[in-house]
Length: 87
Image 1 (cartoon, helix red, strand yellow):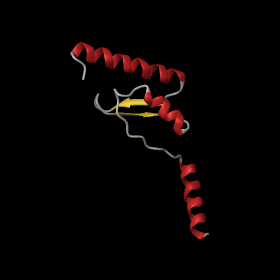
Image 2 (tube, one colour):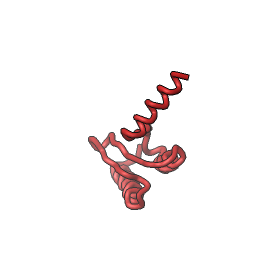
Image 3 (cartoon, one colour):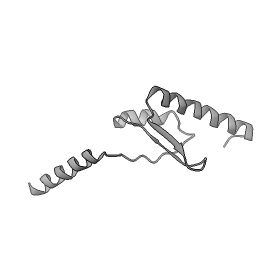
Image 4 (cartoon, helix red, strand yellow):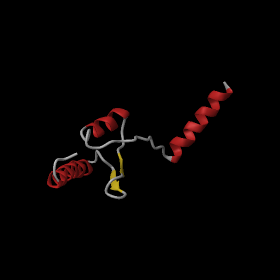
């Protein structure tokens, strides 16, 4: 926790500058907050790309990371699973 409200504001704005830079560069596809406390971001790439994108925000931000599949990727996974079950 920051020692003062002023330090908290300074830290949050610093983090938001980092978010805006990642959005501008395309590393971060989307970012949003629900209530000023919780939020989400979308990073496309390999697992290494995702971890690299998140590490710079630690320890200021805690994450739960979930892979997201497109409809086509999900269909391919279902078909692959069905084929494996028949083998």
